[in-house]
Length: 77
Image (spheres, one colour):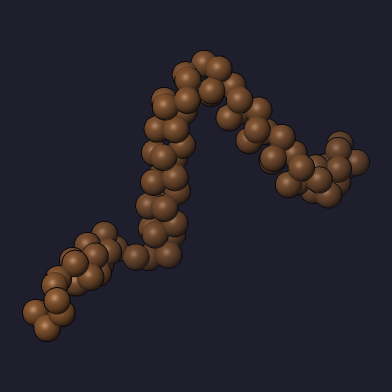
């Protein structure tokens, strides 16, 4: 068991890439391109929301930041 864990630690990104590629291929075969694209988009959104929650960023802060960037300065044409 110890040698197995050492192998996984030393080759973590190879194994992660293998699993990600396998899952992507499996999703493409089962669901098709656009449904797989939708699943990836929702997963990315979940990752971003979870990252913000981990970092202590509130949704209210994000909305205020987006709203302040969308206001049009009357001096610009």
